[in-house]
Amino acid sequence: MQQLTHKSDVYSFGVVLLEVLCARPVINVGLPYEEVNLAGWAKSHYQNGTLHEIIDQNLSGEIAPKCFMKFGEVANSCIKEKGSKRPSMDEVVRGLEFALQLQEAAEKAGGIVGEFVLDKQDLSFTLQAEASHAGLDSETVLPR
Image 1 (cartoon, rainbow, N blue to C red):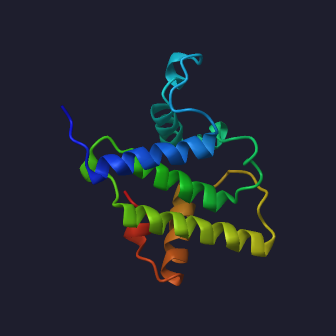
Image 2: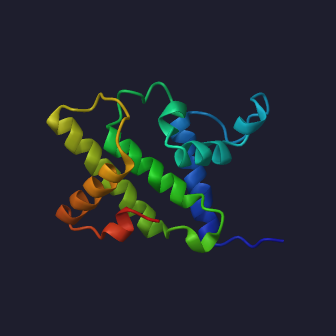
Image 3: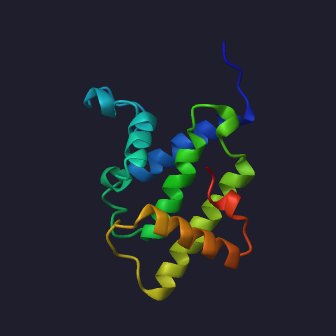
């Protein structure tokens, strides 16, 4: 029997983030087998670089690509299989605050609508640079 811990709360919060991002319930037995469990389905898409294919259509074109990538990264870090690999809630909050800063910066610059065609390496470098400018630790902003 598994025990509930702060890290299981982090997992649950990650699932809620995915529910918001994808606008669908955690379990949907009416879908094909690989799509029934939202966490597993989203993790697979994240790892394949295709998370943008499953987001809520109402968000598509509204969320800045860098914000989307950061949000997806935070959600994915929360649903790691091993609790010890998940971030603390403080790290999750910092990551989400950074995602919000990226969204606000994109809105201010007038560049929200765009394709989700960001090279993972370029994005990682960009997020690390922006994190250091914001005074955030890149380890916190970019959980592994």
